[in-house]
Image (cartoon, rainbow, N blue to C red):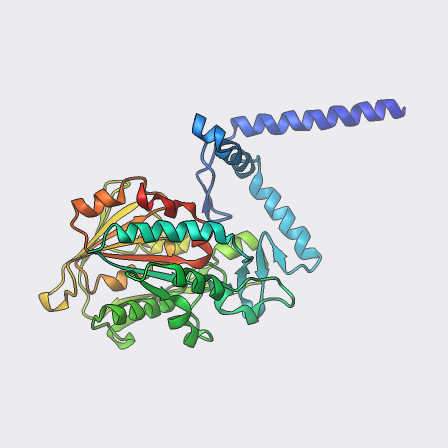
Length: 380
């Protein structure tokens, strides 16, 4: 009797493995996870270099994990189990005070950070006639650690930002987000349920950059501030799956003396007559309302009066923190080129030369930068 039970157990286990393997191979592979609000690992490329560097093995492991059958259902079950035990952390997301969610931030690998800094420094020294600014913004956990659950471990993003600023080439202007966001830490400069800053936080970044560039920036009274959504539950909510949270509002700042901006998306060879895509307000990823989401390469051209033009062109090399900042910059620069280095695989040197770029703004958040090796592509 016991032997029969053992056989059934083994057969059931083996059968389950085969069943999941079957589903793994036949189910379609999604490119983007709405639940986690991130791009999933693509099919690994088998090359000798990837094999020798172990990159193929690491990407294969990530590919299997990201595309495990019914992954979204398993994440939901895990989240429900964690919350039933009154746990205040799930999938790397803390449930903090005042309705805020935070992404866990532990001590990063400073060896990797130095490699990223060296890449930026080399890029800057290779373009000595180009005016470059590197803006590094903390995420909400960096600016509001007092809202974390009691004894929740968290490493200081301020230390990270200061380290990066100290090791940046002095010919490049480094802007530490703590300097211009810190005085407003008690205000709504971050979404409570998402990893981005709000449009107000983006406005503060715009003012700081404009002051550094000696531009005549617009004050808040120069904008008509509209709430375009009051139902935004962002990336922290999708990952943490905490219940009973109030959604965020999404605001847009429309200049009272508005001008027209065309947005060309090179990825799709498509031109939009707006910097905002209303269709995303009916989707999960409402933050993609700004610039229509993530694209490798974009160009924004604005019909400015001569007295409004502060400089002719600007290249923004960025992560998604730049999406709600760039509309402010179009008030001063008629031609803005935007590269998301995570997805752009062309030569940035050649692009700058072909488009006669003399001004560059790097705009990243601390959490993305310290774990984003794509910055090494700067010197490809």
